[in-house]
Amino acid sequence: MLTPHPIAPVAPATVVAQPPPPEPPVPGMDPVAAQRWALRPAPASPWLHEEVGSRMAERLLWIKHRPSSWLDWEPVAGGVAAHQAVRQVLPDARIFVTSAQAAQALSAVGRSPKSAPSWWAKWRGRVPAVAAVDTRVGMVWANMGLHLSPRPQTVLQRWYQHLDTDGFVMFSCLGPDTLKELSAVYTRLGWPAPSHAFTDMHDWGDMLVHTGFAEPVMDAETITLTYRSVDTLLTDLRALGRNLHAQRCAVTRGRGWLARLHEALQTHLPQTPDGQMCLSFEVLYGHAHKPQPRPKLAATSTVSLRDMRDMLGASKSLTNR
Image (tube, rainbow, N blue to C red; front, top):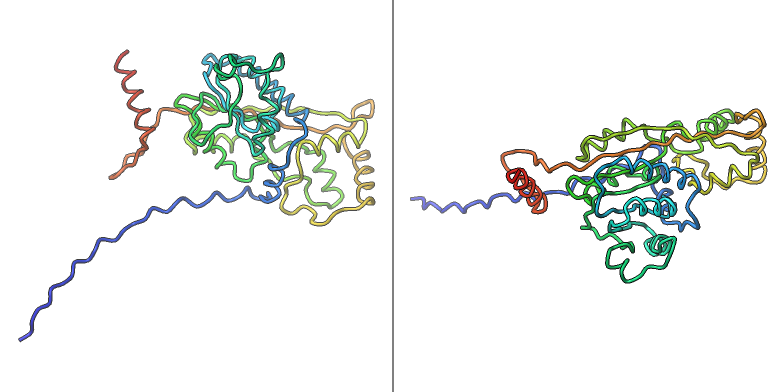
């Protein structure tokens, strides 16, 4: 007679949630070169970045809701004078900074242009502090940096996480028509592109919505700079960044190539009637706000404690109206 053996119960399978795969780098951009440029200490803010920052600060005056706190994303690269312009618009707001060079950033923007920080200014939050991972603010200010990020959607997600509900982001970056005259010269000579391809403003709008931002507004303007000498032109370009194209020349070029570049720029760049060389920079401006959280409904939904508190707070405020 066969003796039945008890069947051991099978333990339920454990499903371990895997983190999402890292964002692939921007097509055509060298992420290693981009990281090296980001970690390079900047001796000063580029002139063009300061100019764009001042124009963006004027746009801040159009916004009726004034945030009580704001975060400056890479303030030295974005413009120290532009940072001070925002402080003039938001004199009572608490200030935070985020930078790959945090010590340099605090040193550059930590003092008011009129006087040294006092204990009263520190108490009011007028002296900037480095933002922690969980710092939440009413506005993220990011001037002229997004086009240099090899993983911009990751940057947008970080902006989103730093914002309070109903907070907003203001940013600027270069658009695809930037340096079109220089690109034409490089193509004429059969050289690799002088820069990686810059993202169109409509694509930025799509990425903002994908991240969770609401009502993104994008617009563009073209700034044309003129130069009397090639040396001045190249000095400006070096201050703005480096060629991050993945297919750029992989070897150090010599004096012969530099002399040929000088001749080509003087000969083939468009010029004003008085003989100055012209370069175009397409500047994109973006604005979007963080809406009330709306979790996706499913058989099982997971909502963070912070988002739950935000939703409950919004519901309570609507009930009391």
